[in-house]
Amino acid sequence: MATTSISKSIAAPKKRARGLTIATVSLINAKVPLGAGAFYGFFIALVVGLIYPVLSKLNFNAYLTSNAVAGLVGAKLNDASSFSALIGLELYGAFYGLIWGGIIGYIAGAALPSTFENGTLDLALARPISRTRYYLELWLSAVLASVIMSLTTLLAVWISAFFVQNANIDGGWLIITQLIEFAFMFLASGIGMLFGSFMNASRAAGGAAVGIIGLAYLMNILGGLSSNLSWMQKIEPFYYAQGTLAIATHDITAWYPWVLVIAGLICGVAGLVIFNKRDLPAV
Figure (cartoon, helix red, strand yellow):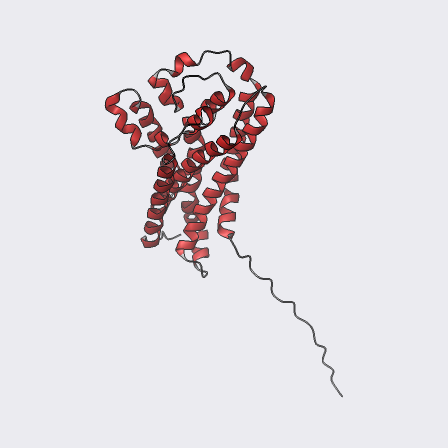
């Protein structure tokens, strides 16, 4: 008997997803703090626009002449009655770096240790993925989180200006202001990655990054209380984040934001060196 063979076509195997998979997954894992930070920034900007008629009637100038209050808000303004000045104080002052910088610092700090805790680091490095690439993609996820929060805040301020008659917000200086704050968040991401490179607990690493930012904020306040303590301000990052001055007075020191960027790069690269040389914890 003759046998007939039937040829069957075998489907080609699906290609594995390539690209920035690690960064994407890390960004998705950080959706809760990222979403909270974006919502909070959007909410503050809208509230300032809605209640601006009431805020403009309050005499903030008497308070802002105090060095202690100037240290708290992160800027010293002669006139705080305009919408740009109030949005600068309420949103782009020192609280921006403390709150949103703290969120980015926590996200970056927890990104790497969390992969120790759930065992995904071992699985990833078992494939042809270098430690350097793995670290850089996690760092990129924190930077992308900074971009998302920056764009959300920028959109919120633009919408808030529609509720104010004669808001007089300069679009160019608004973008410059947001870029200054993005430089601060980039520094926070570098600080977080540095702590995450040698710590095994995600909450401890993220909390340490937040603690450093909180310590810098305290130094900013104490440095403004006395001329003998002014050196404390010059060694902490809030001194170089002039977001309030940019949007309110259109006057900044151009090289200050680069101090934040360079410091963030130094911290992030130092973390990369530490991560490449350390012994990974056994799961």
